[in-house]
Length: 215
Image (cartoon, rainbow, N blue to C red; front, side, top):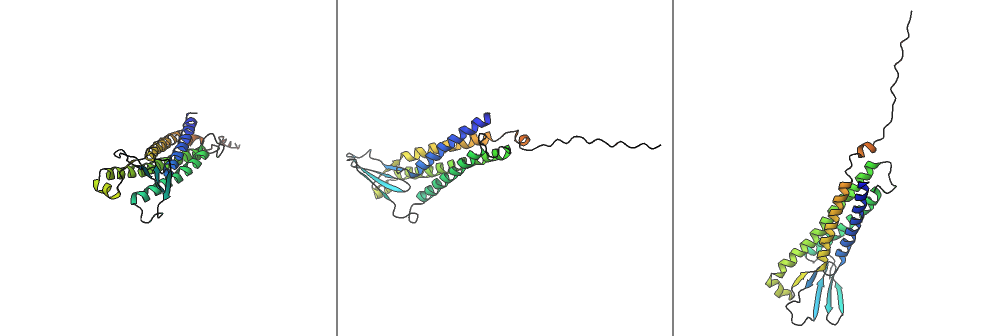
């Protein structure tokens, strides 16, 4: 009963982690321009993994994709794209495997050990996916911080960027996915799996043949 509750809790946390990972991947505000020092805020810029957006104080905004898909882009941007996409793929795979391995499902009910291994596999995939999206947002956050204090770089691009909301959503997604994975892994450690997963056949003791007495 306890393992079943843990599995259901981990499953829904994994779904929430998967959704937040996808939201993080496609949000356009990984970085946003710092307008604190500007007297008149005429334009507000944000950059994401796939698009760059400009917001006017009149309410108009435009978003444009990068000129190339991979070639010529910064290394951290390419790596963040790959990590986020892989995280989503692992999250989808973990959700499918977990839904099959839950004790409340009717799939492979005669083999509890297999279901426990499915839940364990799903937990490991969730942890790896969470670490990936966390690495992506942390890498971007580190570069934003370095560029923020690099006066020469700010003078070249003319804009100082700060952390965008997508980074915080990504860190939340990492936490949800890692917690989900740990819960699923703990729920799969059942000491009775070996006993219930291995069928036993009762073999009655064979009666010894009575030796015939010869006179």
